[in-house]
Amino acid sequence: MEPLKVVAQLWERIEARDWDGVAGLIAEDAVIEWPVSGERIVGRANFIAVNSDDGYTDERSVELLRILADGNLVVTEVEIPQDHVVYRAVSLWTVRDGEIVGAREYWTSPGQDPAPRWRAGYVEPLVAD
Image (cartoon, rainbow, N blue to C red; front, side, top):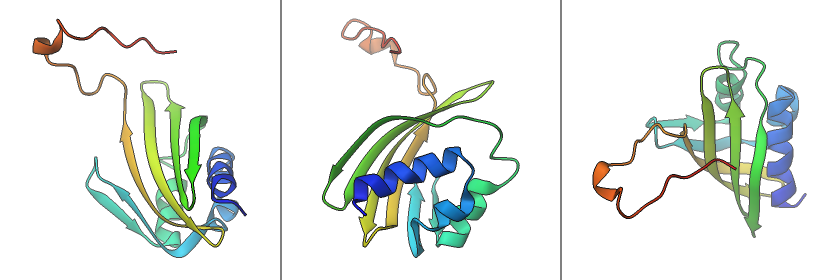
């Protein structure tokens, strides 16, 4: 399966809470890094455990905003709204032989990092589309 389709299916299966389906897309020894929180998830089982935890998987939707692929590298931007906050992630996925073998994901929330005042004369507010 093409890398872009593998990653598109990943997000679809995460939204559906289809953890067996997600497991079928992740290599057993995959490494997923979250630099913002300083964490590394090593292995399929740990990736599934983190994402399927009851305290983490409430009824939230996953909106795939963008997906681009170049060879084995796939880049996605997703939005996951919750009652109190909207999460966004830009993820760089590496796919080999139909499986995700690695990723680096940058998770944040809009407005979490306020703009410094000194830039006010050079920028304008970003309005959500």
